Image (tube, rainbow, N blue to C red; front, side, top):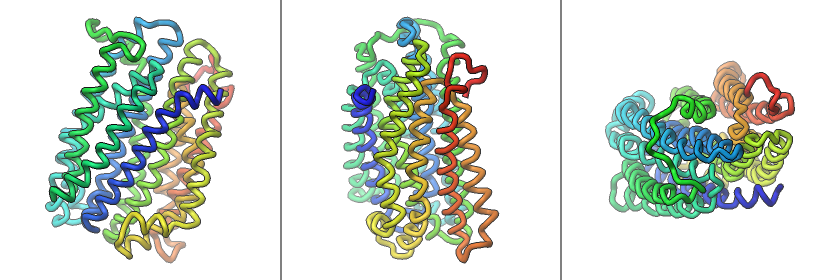
Length: 436
């Protein structure tokens, strides 16, 4: 079983490693542009993460799991028809991100960081969303179609190339061409557009294991097969990034240094998502295939094997972040005040990274099983603890920011534990009356 997971997880893990590397590079580029730019970037960050998570791990998981369950039930015609429905969802969702956020985020930056910073970086939201949102949704949806057909290697080769191209293009646009933060968004738009076109050629050529049927009229039942998982997963992504936004809003009262510092800590926290996705993308397909053929015990065994693999990777990293946070903070920013506060935040959050990664890995497995209520409960508890507990205990700390760092760490730990408790026979079974 480990060999089966590794065979599918290896390409996804390579994509995740490339994505993590690129996200570190993005943080470095933003930091090199100055503390004001880093603050503006930190405010936009939850929305950028929401875009990536909603299109890739959330709705992408809905697409991948729907196709995997169809193929597991030997219904290839349904898998062919699902492609058109997935693309319609991607296009509409991309526009829902592109249009409102291009106008809303400059105002939000002004409210949280000041009008001068908002004016300086006013083109960043337009580039990151107005230009990049639809291509990002398309490339992640097409990747999910290929993964649902078990073609993780095809996705791996294309996406690793795309992430490394983005890693090189961001500093060129932002620093060398002096486009600032807008250069980051422009680089994303260009790379995702090319990657989406290349991915579409692979799907059209039948490399997902079937030729998509684009002639069928849209059917509500096929939209439901994707959205039953995808919408709930998108809601979870929204809750996760709303948590970061609300904590940022609380810290904004103490100055831009705290906003910039928490942006760094939040980026490290959210690195667990692509790392978990490395194993989780394989689990979505494998669990979906097992559930499609009625093998629930095997599905649970696959899920827990993948969770153990994720724990073995993330536990050493989490301990390193918690015990030696200054090393990572110094690598990501040269501003001594931001560096000190980021290290303080990481010293709390590091302890929750491994449980969070296990929960995220099992969340991707839950998509394949179409059992999403457990992850949804975990997401609600996470935001309640991170924001509510922080506000409740802020007066008990010398620095109120410490209360929020502690509450974020408790929130992501609780998330992992609750998702883990939901992966059990009473929930993951054919006889389960309520889908989690």
